[in-house]
Length: 374
Image 1 (cartoon, one colour):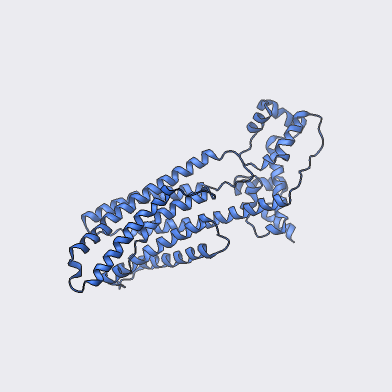
Image 2 (tube, rainbow, N blue to C red):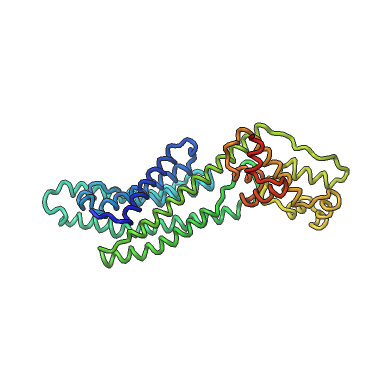
């Protein structure tokens, strides 16, 4: 049995993978379809790594490996695809063509089971059986190519979905919480690069059957585990935002206007920004407001600066800070992340939330939270 630092790292990663997948799959907080597919993806990666790890370090023989081996690797691509799909569109309906992603897994499972039946019913010279050699070649050589192509297609399609989603979600909707996508784009791009490098090792394997691409497998696994850890954090934020929004709807209140104005444009501004809660839209800008009021941007700027004695930016940020303060003082949200509270108040990032909040109140959100909780 071979043990070194590299294998120790792999073993630790496998144990982490099992813990992470079970945590996601059996924690009530992560009861969304996206979370379930993420948990299944990590489990499929972990089981794949475990099988090859046991054979690589010599714990099990070649025949024992064939006895326990199942083609879990073919589940990685469909699980990744459905995780991204449900992360972007939680209520999506799965089409039959999408279910076809599981066909390679079913096909190679049948080949694997057939191999086992023939191998373990053949007592002598089982390795020399022509049928077994053919099945082994299909599984090992062509299976790797099919899985590689499937992963490449799924990651490319997922990236296309992500960039398309970005273009189509510029309009704010109080009933829809847009998922944060930058982290997922970066991670999938890195996975795509690794898959392309992985193809080199696969073709090397055609030339030299003893070639090893264990390091690439480890890299892919680490990236998938990173996807898991970051993914559960992001999904937790989405869940908290959903709860905040549901709480706001059940405790709906009318936003108070500072004073009645005889200026029709100011009344319209109040109606759009406050009563329609457009200040909660992180993409809401003076250009957007000017278009809705059918005013020029310079005219709108004069209304804010000369008649309301405040800039558009300060006006919007003050409303957002007040909204955040309301959430920070609500006992039901005492254990919620500041990121979720800031995003639901209309800020587009934690950094912007902290900076703006301190500028207006003189305290950071965490300092304010400690003050009101004491």
